[in-house]
Amino acid sequence: MDTRTLEYFLKIAEYQSITKAAADLHIAQPYLTRQLQSLEAEVGVPLFIREKKRLHITEEGRLFQEETRQILDLLDKTIGQMRSIHSGIGGKLFIGAIETAGTQFLPDWIEGFRKLYPAVTYSLWAANSEDVIARLAKGLLDIALIREPYDEDQFEGIRITEENWIAIVPAASGLCPASALVYTTLGNISADRSY
Image (cartoon, rainbow, N blue to C red; front, side, top):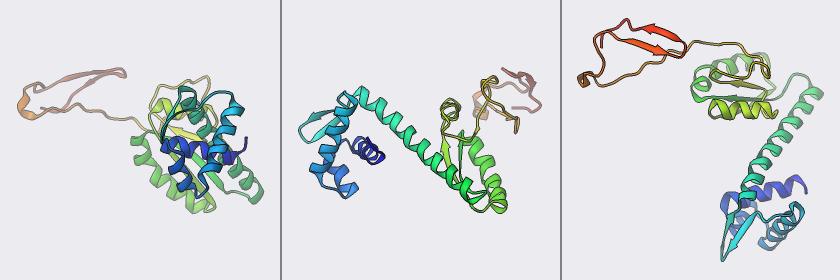
């Protein structure tokens, strides 16, 4: 099994069709069919259920699809690191972030870092905190911007900001009194505005 075969598998899984995958990859359909059959023989389980002109990915196929993506991402990261070692400070920095942190902090940080290290490129992954932490734990990310909590025994972290969260309702709803006391998991916060 080589990386090209894994990339073929991902393309077939994306389209759920060998015909469409072959057209996108610009290769012959019979060749792609043989590659898929060889891959299924090697892993020892069917990755797709064949139905006329359509394929349906199996449960094993979904797991293989997820793991294959991570394998190829890790390979890409490793190649980037090797190139950066060879050429000095460069390569690709893999960053995972929740959307709010990614849009709030990353543009300015990347712009400043790029001025110091122009040979560095970036791969960004946006997801929820749990997904970002999982990718960091598997070595697929170099840094993660998440919401607390996180496993302090496994990761080191620094707090970059305190988020202010507000619940709002239409003014005419009458659901929020003139002065409100809001309880959060971080402690009690007294509202200082009238609603």
